[in-house]
Image (cartoon, rainbow, N blue to C red; front, side, top):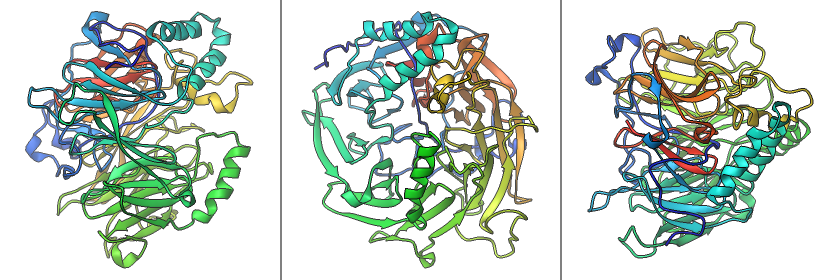
Length: 554
């Protein structure tokens, strides 16, 4: 059954743009590991251990895997550079706000059943054929059709240049109003687990084993009122769903929803004062905890709140803050007072590798920081000027501008092997009098406008011999709003860029930072608008647009 306003996808195109997420797998040593464009896979560090309770596919959870790495060992698109015609792209209408997509299980007839959620619908589709299978209506209007979505995008760009920022702000507010399910996952049974502010809902096939049947709600769970609004979702390696509230409560919930455990993070008493701080500074969406969180195979849950980074340990019986169980809590730099906008990621998994947690901090010109996530080496000396002995490294991410005063990201820290990538999402300019609440819209819907296009990506690398985090390279390629990802097999960073006012798919050499190729996309409908770039098992790239899902074939 197809929800009214939806249609099976055509291999052509239609409207596009949208907002936030991304995540994925492992791969890369220092630059010397890649002597050429074809990396020696045998030389790569240990991959992220697969989580047996997630769907066995490329991207079953936000940021690709439990470690939140946004990287893979699958080869992706390669050169040469060229323009892409609309009939080379696959697109189908979803309605507003489908920022992320999640790859599911493969059926006996060879289809992979993928899922996505947005403001007004849960959608199930054939991920290999890129064909919509069913939609389940949720939320409230206004509802869009493909025609009204086209008209909404056209209204923004037909406005005079000086009026476009406010028109874009109005449309972004419509797209994001009541949005749910940015952070979701597909479990090993192929069911779609969607997190919301007040609880979680599991969706599946109305007829068991029949992917062509409608979508139904399998079960729901309401969080206890004391927890407050939830943000994010992950899964422990023994099959418990993980949630964290904006105010600092960590919960694990059994998949049948019959049991849950909770613990409150240290310093969570600061959450209320923080909420008042951001309210006065017009920073909606900035909560004490506002990003997703990685999970390791031994029960470690890593949460970054405003000013502090936490490791909570799930023992299999309880959530622990006890250092005897391996838990810890440490401060990180936060001169802005806003905390970090980045989902942290785990780095290092082999028995002889350094095990680190990486993320960007809250300084006005952000730093990439690394923390020892397990035991601190006995001979480790605290870095001078750092707030914690657990901090293993800190490097300023100024995008190559030593005079920069404002560099921040709202994207995850992208990790592959010992490399970590960050992007600049600060608009090049902000119109006089433009409301601070709308600053991110300038690099979202208007990210290809040269007035606002931000530029800059930087790769940082952990040197295990010197035990030092250092800058590897800086690229001036634009990456205004999507969450990039890394293909170790192609030795490539992929992102949505901008050239001469046109949206592009960019391929950047992971070893050197040199531009490898780009594909020019046909118009504003292919703006990734804060979605996560996702690589499928086949190596194709899929991403959200304001009103649909698009695919660039490898």
